[in-house]
Length: 376
Ligand SMILES: Cc1cc2nc3c(=O)[nH]c(=O)nc-3n(C[C@H](O)[C@H](O)[C@H](O)COP(=O)(O)O)c2cc1C
Ligand SMILES: O=C(O)C(=O)c1ccccc1
Image (cartoon, rainbow, N blue to C red; front, side):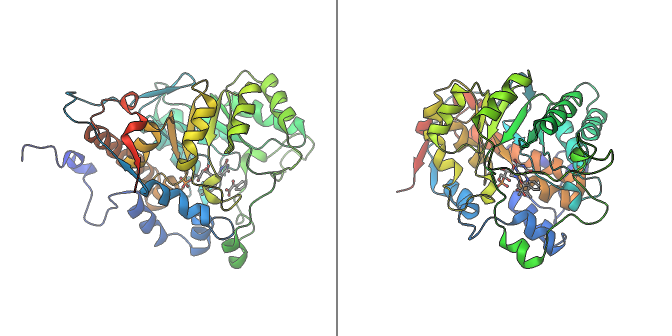
């Protein structure tokens, strides 16, 4: 056959076997059959009735793509650069807690896959491996420098603690700080209540929280979610670091405008994968209003429900600079460790490449809002 139908299978070692997942949803199904059901519920679940959880994915399905034809390009260029960090695709790894729940190597394996594929990884403050050790694993996998790690944090009521966390992330080489602002309290996950999943199993801990100021040298401090956190804390952080500061979880256009006024460098448009306030709209439905509020002054990264290359193309066309994926990374990690995460990232990158070509686009820059239609 003259077409490149099976390009994915060109390397026999990488060729999927008959049972290998072929897309991100099949990775979820494969993970479901191997992960302890209590942990699966923790990862897959959302808050209250899980309306937002479902809608994040469903909303992409309500949008259509209207491709352009005869645009005469040879190859696609998927590379992007965000805050001076080059990446091989506009898909980055959103921060998720507790990777060791599904794989003994935990965040180390995820970081190796990110490094090997040229993907920006946002390390969670609630990682089960310390950020310095995650960075070391990434360096081993891509000794020539590799892609960036960013660090996600919840501003702690005790500023000394936040300062120490920022210092650790900075020392580890993190290139940006992603401050999650949608969690003044922790959302209610009824699946976890039903299952009695309240804490990490013995032998696992939030390693970034170990040995912080005000505690015993080896003690792990609980992560505080504090309703007292306000814009003054963002101003303080902005002054206390030279790293780019992004806010994750801004969904109201007025807050996007406030973020600009407070000198924030970027936004992650996120509803926390439907895990915080339930019934918040799907992020893809909010994107046009947030992009309009920001007016191109800072990048907007979207996460929530991205499962296909067409989802990525829709978000980019509507003005996102990049997208993040949360759960699919955990599914890959659960199924096959580093290799599984690599496969998830490669599959999605290939889908984006094909979807771009089919839209008549040579790069994300060619994607414009007129390519996206609401379904009648
Ligand atoms: C198991 C799990 C843990 C998460 N932990 C964090 C976290 O520690 N910090 C954070 O800002 N967001 C966290 N998130 C939210 C993700 O960063 C992201 O917003 C969300 O998963 C995106 O949706 P998706 O899973 O549909 O791709 C978590 C999500 C999941 C599923
Ligand atoms: O589960 C989550 O979504 C999450 O954000 C989190 C935050 C702190 C600790 C564990 C998980």
